[in-house]
Length: 487
Image (cartoon, rainbow, N blue to C red; front, side):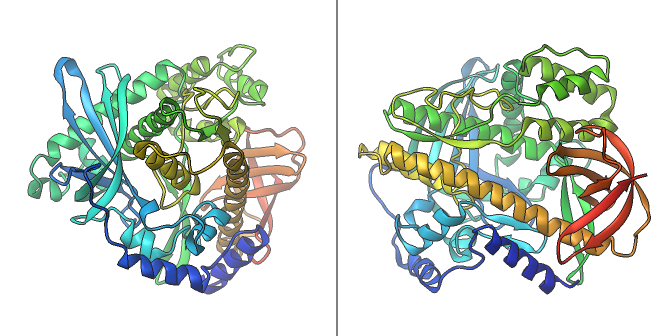
């Protein structure tokens, strides 16, 4: 199978799931016309271009959504600023681009390539916080105490300039003492101090959440590897220190934006994760390691177990993490009425141990973040909310549905890629981890290449988190299936 065939499988999968695989001509023209929109300039937009803003992302990322900068305050506290690209300025509500974004609600990342939520002229250029480019942004301004508590926060508009585009791998290797500092540290005054302060702040924010029960997991995803435009492998894409750093900052910023909208009496979109329905299975996994968890879901107890296993068995921790994440289930969106701190009536986000949480830091890639941005800008300007509670409820339900559809497309294309890689290995036996066990089937993940398939024979008695030896029975790249039997 060549990349063109894989791309067609992705397009067909998108269409079958109700996702748009291409932009309408009107959307592409609208995106081009956005070049002519002059940047806003008024007293309410602060000029923060002089600060040492920087970004950390994947090596090949072009749609940069956020920057950050920090400064030390007395008594061990710090001021942390996160700037989020003002995408709303270039995407008019109700327009052709907005319609595409509202339909798909997310960028779809497949082994055949990315299907962006916004045309690339926007997400990869006009609304991206590129290095050395002046950009409009929404700034989440937080005071972080030495113990990781965010005591005060505000949100306002500003112009910013990215001083350095850094990479996860480069920053992480340097912070871990395994590589020299990124080259840009020498050319940007104050950048090294910024990175070290960010590392300390991220650790404090993470520690504060973990005292409340945030789960310390380490999952690994599959990354397609191409050589001369031919797919040659699916390899693990590991988390690292820099990825964790950025995640910790974004969690803090997302919490601050939710609280800002509450304080302004605005409705909002919330991201939540219910307590796991399969807590009994999680408890059995813990018991297999000699640990007894409470009878009812308890995030603190679960995190203590996970932290102990990370130390006791670092090599096996990724598999345990994957099993727990699968049993936790997927997050969802819900509308929160105005002036209610926890208006969804749910338990907040079980995995992150936060109650006030609104996706807001990736408006180039997620529609809920763009909606939240419009709410924030209206609140800052003293205007009425641009969405009613009823509209937000409809958006939340649709975004949850489309996020699930996008995940299914990504898995289907990954399976198609995996099936092609395995087509000459029928009959081989693999070590596998059970990742799904339900009425629709029992699924396992093998590690080389890293992919999931279905156990069609001998699956009786297997459950999530179990390990098994499986034999490859059949593959079909066009139909995206990989079948195993228990060996």
